[in-house]
Image 1 (cartoon, rainbow, N blue to C red):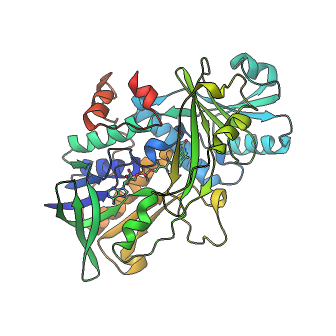
Image 2: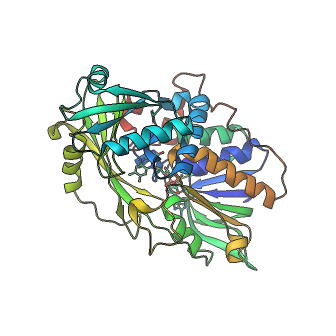
Length: 406
Ligand SMILES: Cc1cc2nc3c(=O)[nH]c(=O)nc-3n(C[C@H](O)[C@H](O)[C@H](O)COP(=O)(O)OP(=O)(O)OC[C@H]3O[C@@H](n4cnc5c(N)ncnc54)[C@H](O)[C@@H]3O)c2cc1C
């Protein structure tokens, strides 16, 4: 089989890249070893960040988030729940940090409103007694399986070939250039030849790059999430303190998802899961919201962040930037026909796809403007269509299993 661009990895980033390239008229094939969103995307917490989490500290990350938050609301209303969010100062939290966050949000144009403890409790009656004040922010909840499947299906509408359940077992390298990949869908190995190969395999990107003899300094980091039956929470809760374990609660209909942690792992396919972290989520998130009952756990799951650190010695875990990195291996490693897109967040998947597609188009000499920030995703105007597509692809992931089942 031959294709112009082969995208490896059917998470939000890879599916978004396939859509972007297909919309520019490029012949593109997307391979995913699992089903869509079967890697980190479908095992994430599901917060459409407003950017407020990243200030003070990471102004660029916050700017990226608020810009993409607005785009995703516009193009993918069927993949989000517009719940809004609150940052809560709890007794013992540093009030200066709250002030700095408020000032930085204002400066960046992130829409905020300060609430007294009483006003916050009026909005969310089950807040704990410890809550001292709150900042309302434009967070939302994102359903990653819907988002990823919508991107993949939209890519197919624009002519892309989708190959879920297909693993890349090796890359084809000839004369210092990647020329394609060997893939296996369970019926034996075959070759897909391509002019350019995009490595969008997230936390597995280092493994894929190694197949082309390229070393990538991935620093994967795992986090736990716990979905608990809970009625009546209608907004995201964040703790107004420097990023730490268990400081976000995501509302679903009839459930809340508590999280998360950040633990460095060597291998995203084989890492230890400390069950005690589940109890810790109840302790930490319980400082914001009362009535969380460990007897009512519906599911718990771990995901692995595709973090990239060119300087792993000095940065680890939460210190590693959540910004994204586009690596052009021709420039960086002398291996042409090959790019990797790593890091980032679900919230910024579209911007990552745009940057990747811009670079690839330059490499394959295709002229074409990115239109993904303007054109709504498939299914936005057809209620129920997106869940039919999720069922068609057999995409079943813990992040939004309860939402899609309904
Ligand atoms: C605990 C946790 C919580 C998070 N919470 C949030 C949040 O609330 N909001 C937010 O914006 N971001 C969040 N993130 C970050 C976000 O989930 C990720 O940055 C994003 O989903 C990564 O998407 P991706 O497409 O790059 O990677 P992935 O979704 O992992 O996609 C890569 C794909 O490549 C496939 N693959 C790997 N190897 C091969 C191979 N050999 N052949 C074929 N396919 C292969 C994998 O199966 C996988 O599906 C969270 C991450 C974690 C871990």
